[in-house]
Structure formats: C-alpha cells, structure tokens
Length: 501
Image 1 (cartoon, rainbow, N blue to C red):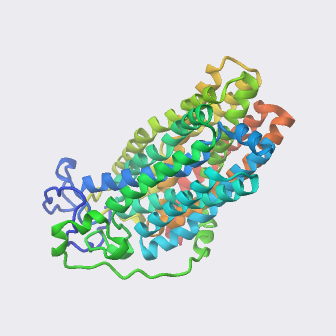
Image 2 (cartoon, helix red, strand yellow):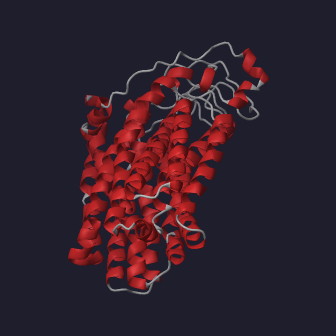
Image 3 (cartoon, rainbow, N blue to C red):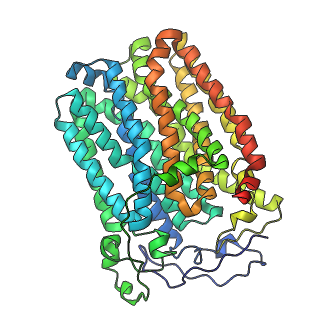
C-alpha cells in the first residue's frame, strides 16, 4: 500500500480558467474512479484545465530550444558561403550551441527553485530575443558564433524548467502523460523547424530565419507574461498560495477572487547558483545509468539531425527547400509519438502498481520510496531501443549505398518514433527519482546529453571522411544497443539503491 503524504495547504488559489467542481474526499482504501477525480487537490491546487494550459505554455516555450538548432540546418551551406567560412566551422557553431545548452540549465535550475519559475522564463526569453535580433544583423563568423551561444543560453533552460513545472503540478501517476504532451512541443520543432528554415532561406535569405525567431519568441513572451502562473512548490506550495510581484501573472492580477486568498507565497530568496548539486546527481549510480543512456540516444539524435542536410545535398543533389521537407520524416514521427508514448508510460505505471498490489493515490500522489518506479518506467523501453538502434544503422547504410530517397527517410521515421519513447522514459524517471529537485536533475540531464552530443557532432564529419556514413551510424547504433544491459541493471537494482541513499 502506498503511504499517504501529509496534505498540502488546502486553500484554493485563483484559477487561470473557470474552476471545476471540487471533488469529495476519498479514502485511500476505497476504489478510485477516474471520472470522479477532476483535480488532484492535495498534491496540486490547480484544476485539470489549469494544468493543461500550463503544460501547453511550457511545451511552447521549450519548442525554442530544439527549434533554434534545427531551423538553420538547411541554411548551413548558405551561411558558410555568405560569411566565407568552411562547413566544418559552421559545425562548430552547432557544437558550441550544444555545450552552452548543457551548462546553462544548471544555473537557471537552482534560481528557479529560489525565486520562481515565472521570473526565469521571462528572463530567458528576453535574452533569446536580444540574441536573435543580433543574429539577424551580424556580418562576421565570430559574432555569429558568440550570438548563437547567447541564443542557446536563452533557449536551453526552457526544457529543464518544463520538467520542473510538471513535477510541481502533476503527481507521479499522471506525470508521464504530461511529459508526453510537453514532448509534442519539444519534438515538433524537429519537423517544423527545418521546413521553415528551408522556405525562408530559399525565398528570402538566411537572415530572415532569425527575424522569424524574434517575432515568434516575442509572441510567446507575451503569452507567458499574461498567462503563466508561479508553480514553484518552495514558493506557492501546491499552488494554493497567492503569488506576488513579478511571480504573479497578469491574468491573476485581474481575477477578482484573488482578493479572497488568505495565504501569500513565501518570499523569494536570491542565491548565487551552486553547480555542485547538478554534478553530484550525475555521479549517483542510479541516476548516472539513466543519464548515460539518455545521453547516448541524444548524441545519436543530434548526429542524425546535423548530418541530414549536407548528406542529402551531397548524395542526392537536393535543394535547400527539398532538404527542409526531408526533415519532416523524423520530426513528424517524434511529434506523433510524443503523446502516445506519454499514455503508454502512464499505463506502465498502473500496470506495475497492480502487479505489486499497490493502490494508486490519485489525490496526494504515491510515496515512491514504497513503489518500484524503475520497473514501471523501464517496462517497455527495450522495444524502443531495439527499433531506434536498428533503424539508425539502416539509415547509415541507405545513405552509403545511395538507395532510393524513401529508404533513409523511412529509417528516420522509425528512429524518430522509438527515440521519443526513450527520451520520455528517461526524463520522466530522473524526475521521479528526484522530484524535489526536478529542475536541478533536469539540468544534470542537460549537461550529460549535451556533452555527448557536442562530442559526437564535433567528430561526425571526420568519421564520414574516414569510414563513410554506413559504418559511422553502425558504431552509433552499437552504442545504443550497449544501453540495454545497464538499463536492465537499473530496473533490477534501482529501487534498492534509492533506499540506500
């Protein structure tokens, strides 16, 4: 039986949308009907509709982290020609983007815990908009490189913040579903971004890419300013406390029932970020295994995405616009899979609970020290790994032998479907393992995955020149297969390791 945690403050906060009816108190021992539970009021004071809006907002914000990388992949050759540099130097901008993407979330993560999620979201978007304006008007490679790093600093924290927000508002049994919804936003950039980049570059020129990002990010900034509430549990508890100052959304300021809220949020504390907690989490054996596995697949994902445009242009003679449309195969697969994988993740949770005779606490959230969360999250990951690794190797050999264009694109679609499942499983599991440090552990994930991706992308062209795409992606597929035994160890020993902490 899962242990019931003490109830959080029960005072209702003002709602972003029209409030739903409060549910009756339900006993832990009684069967729980999903239709009766419209609000996890003890774990979170946010109504279901509020949660959905919040997740849509953070998914849209997180869209910019991958978008800023992939939107200019089709334009790499055009930018290199315009600035008079080599394609290898343009790949350095991708590598440095990934390095910054790995470091910055560890800084913003702790700040968001102490001063709130909302101020950090607004800050990173201001940084992003300024960098994008600069990219639209610069004329030298050095400035391009510096501003791409600044742009990465503005966008990279949004994904780690999103996982923190989801942990704030969603109990474990529904967390996978919300992570899946967020991944729709993150992953749809992989298909939409290159098409936008290809269209703008071929019709208007590569500078228009960055002006598009200025307009789009400015619009999202306004949405966050007006609609996004504070969710940090350190400040507003389960969401029932009234936010103040910059932590209070504009729409909450105009809600009349805000005046009746009796409790005010804790005072934010500005503290210099300490990177040590992020590094410590990386070296804990249970989280290290999950992060290592996630990093391998992120490296594979980055290498596939970064290589697609130049390989298709060189081997198939495609135009910039045609290359942009080719990214739809991988991107559409990840977008389609994101929501479905989230539902599978939640199903695996319920299935595991039944197998261990545990009644899910849908009101307060389960005590995961009494729950085999590793078995639940890793229940179907083996299928994802097999499909993703096999399709990656097939993608490389299809390019090696210049098969019909449909073959490498089909391989891209398959690996996109499967790698989405792996990212969902790994990211949800690390948040489960450290739900009280959700943003910090997500920042640790960013460090490991971006370090692996930067290393992979930096040597990718060298490997192509030495052994060709076939053997290059076969080696990468071998690394992916190598995650099977370590994740099996996590599944079997992870619960025990958690209890020994």
